[in-house]
Length: 234
Length: 149
Image (tube, rainbow over all chains, first blue to last red; front, top):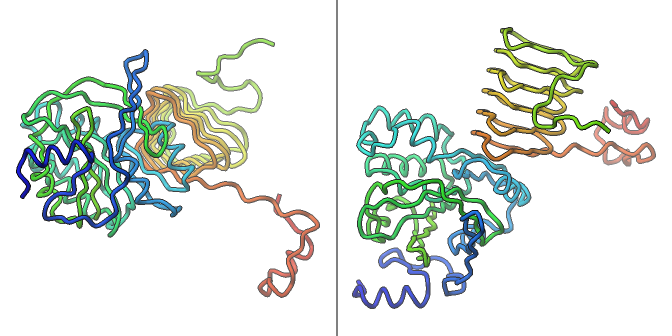
């Protein structure tokens, strides 16, 4: 395992770290974290996303895919995915978490509520999706709910499909902004903050690799906003 | 030209059936004119050549098939249109959509899938498929240029 200092240098220079042990399975996109970020008058942000770019790179050249967008239905995301020729499934997963568990993270350990949550939000046949865009929703789940959700995602995603997720890179549990995510283009997102909420746990490369251990690979991108963007291949 | 409120479509005085907010219907609704639903409906709603509007007080647990559907209230059920689905702010739709076009305002809640089916172009009157490429039984219909619409 690389010493932490060397890993942080490697991460800063390349912007992407293939986790040790997973092995690089794909050619990495061009290195470098984009410095382009636009702050709008309404406080929202437009920035480039390496994770999003990789996600659309991975599903390129194919139409008619089934893509699950968990940002909440919005015209921009729907139009973008439909224009690519895909069938879109959409819902607001963060809102669903609040509806099922309230804001108390301790409630997320309730097994029957977890089952209810999964039934309400992931009641799809096996191997339904070619792509899943979770955005930042998973980081607001406590370990029990998170583990159950990832297991269910594994079931409803097709082999060789891709998942996009964002996690705070903070080394402790903190309140972080929750965003509404809109796709501007294949590598640019428009973020509008919709309050703050605590993360469910600390996320680092190691525990994310463990979380997605059933999947075939995990690719990390670290942003200037101290966010881990990950692409997971089923 | 007088301005007509766009965001809260009222039933047109001409050729629009209305289910008021005090009305509850359980069953199948078939209509050959536009329909404005501001009450409760449970079952199915079909208006193939027309528009169905679910008003802000509308609570529909039904599948809806129409030319256009505008939703300002709540719908639980699948929606299928030949032209457009329009989900307005404060509306809620849980169900799958099959349509040619979709519009969803910020603030609307939608949970389900969207399948875009562009309408098939009507065959040109002069175009006739070569008999060799048509299966038996279809050749006669193609040769006469018969069209359903």
